[in-house]
Image (cartoon, rainbow, N blue to C red; front, side, top):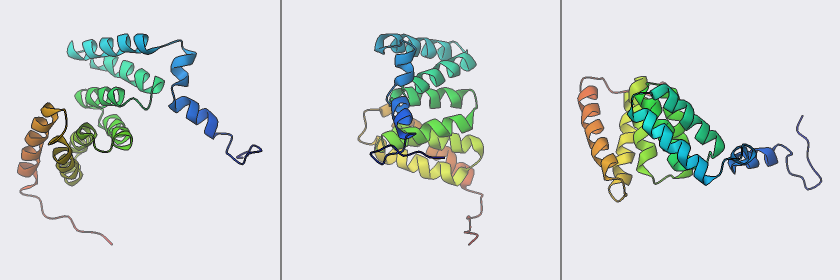
Length: 166
């Protein structure tokens, strides 16, 4: 049952807003400095091949600050590396929702779709990544998107066109 307060707003909106604004980090006593240490630790674990431990840290960072695009990017990247494509796709969707002109969200989404075998969707996302990466501050994502696009072109070359079932 949804309860309305005397202003007409939904009572569940306030806790959700609090979570989205970092209430969990506050309740845990984690400030910017502590979260920065956690991010550095997650990055180090990922670099050292401890992907599952890194994934847990990135997930914790996202829970603490869901609107932090860099945390979502870390989660998406790590999830791709440990082949958790559904998690990567969810994080990529969050990036696109938070920063619709950020090429990283489309790149991660395309890579996750490729991992899930959704080649057409992967190609669409990589095309968007290339479009937004041209004037972005992430040249590595432009290069990675170009490589992934070429791979998709090769993969889709022998596939029949998709038809709309409706």
